[in-house]
Length: 79
Image (cartoon, rainbow, N blue to C red; front, side):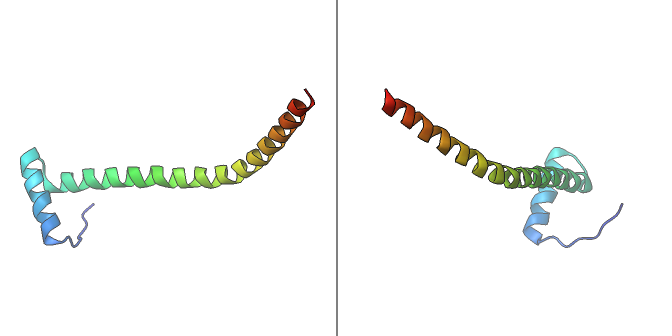
């Protein structure tokens, strides 16, 4: 698919140089860059969702751990 985008001159110039160094078409360079960006953003989105889930779970786990610690202190105090 063809897409027309605006790219700042310094970014375009750097991409042009890199494409020539790698001997790949400029469109291939932009495609690779976009693929890497999307893969990174996709994994970041998954991480954000997992963090949200574990934030809720962690609060429950932390409460349980606090109760266990209190129980251990009580048992140790009896000894």
